[in-house]
Amino acid sequence: MQVRAELPDDAAAIRAVICEAFGQEGEADLVEALRAAGALTCSLVAIVDDAIVGHVAFSPVHVDATPAIGLAPVAVRVAHQRRGIGDALIREGLARLAAAGHELVIVLGHARYYPRFGFVPAHQRGISWEHPVDPASLMVLELRPGAARPGVVRYHPAFAAVS
Image (cartoon, rainbow, N blue to C red; front, side, top):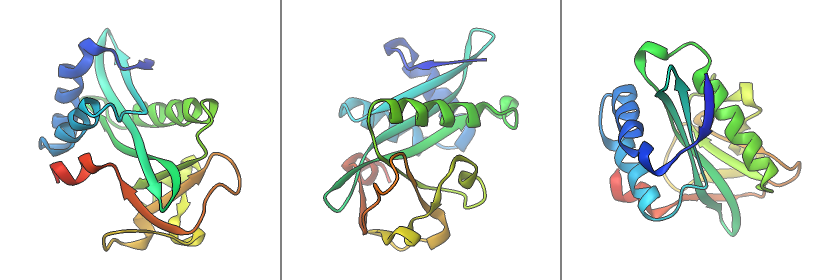
């Protein structure tokens, strides 16, 4: 498996992966809206046998005035799930974000999946989301220790446009 940055010709294959993984088009529409807005901070694909089988997107968010990065969505084709592809995409994305100087990553996701990457419940850092959510599912990862400041997470407007 190879992980690399998204290329312009990858858009259709990325859409197919996301639609298959989620069983709907909403998440694929989100990625396309973020791409059109120039708001994909990091977009990676996983390649197996010359085919795109996975994708992860990271986009700008804010915790009040503090800039951060949101992880969403991550998708892997059904036949390739549970093989470490999503894990590899997320780890590579986090490494690239850290190398680029980003300090804070937010994810709204499964409370038992994301701690393996170092995410902790956001409420432990005084961070909440602007919408009601299970507190265990909103998580934060400090790429620089001490980067988290209390506040309310606000995602890129593309999230509201496709929800």
